[in-house]
Amino acid sequence: MRSLLLILAVTAPAFADDYDVKYEEAGNTCDTRPVTLTKGTLTIAIKKGVVSVSFDKAFALTGKATKDGTINAKTAKLIGTSVGGLSARYSVVGHTENGSLTLALTAMYVRQDTNKPYCAQTWNVTGTRK
Image (tube, rainbow, N blue to C red; front, side, top):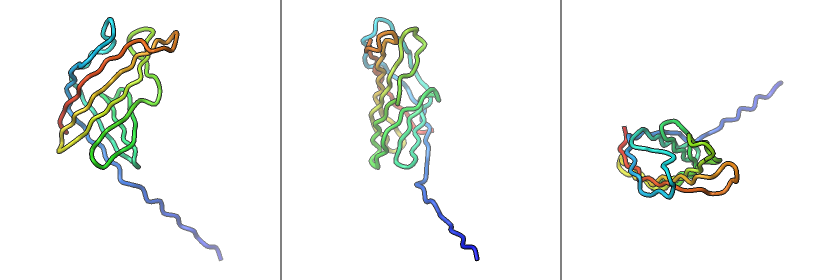
């Protein structure tokens, strides 16, 4: 007689929220602005204790999810930019509360030839859930 072993995997439910957001530049140490952000869509997804923040589907920042709505995430690797010779490492901190979103987005630009920091840009990001 054959025995059948049934294994059930229980996973935490996943969810994602889309936000209409507005970007306001808060700081810039660059000679010229490598990136200009004004408004767009931001998606926050949580699955198995990991939060993923995506800006206009361009790239994802990841971090640990918290129950109080705090967000702290960053890119896992350098992301290429439209400015020749520069890559960027993005990070975001902030929180969500009652359908609204308040974040600070930072881009640390790195020279591709020397792999050394070049300059930084910071934006205040505010928005509401769609």
